[in-house]
Amino acid sequence: QVQLVESGGGLVQAGGSLRLSCAASGDTFKNYVMAWFRQAPGKEREFVAGINRSDGTTAYADSVKGRFTISRDNVKNMVYLEMSSLNPEDTAVYYCAGRLATHRDYDNWGQGTQVTVSS
Image (cartoon, rainbow, N blue to C red; front, side):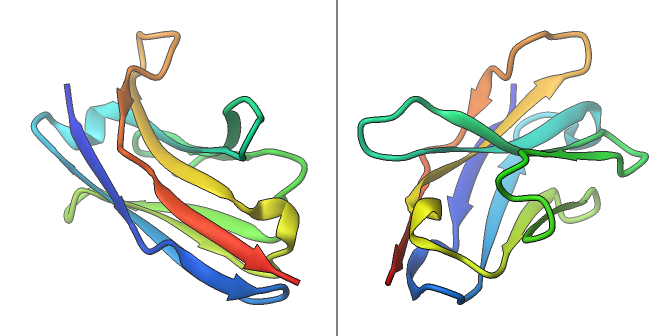
């Protein structure tokens, strides 16, 4: 079990950039696959980006490929999501999530941080 706390959300204009951070504690961070999800008002939570435990392999939703970059620092126990070329469709609460490689579902979640993109 790891505890996750997101930060870095805010209000930006279309075309702008934000960097989200996720601080992890409580368990051996390097053993966890990490990811970012988001949930817009009235919509279901969706996968945004994921990163492997150690080799840096990443995966992205088609809607954010080329604009978002996920990374991790296993020394600082941090996960980041760098977002650029933001548009109003990116407006959502963004959640940091983690799972052990043997788990099929993400079962460690942060409280979320709001990202709002204005026209």
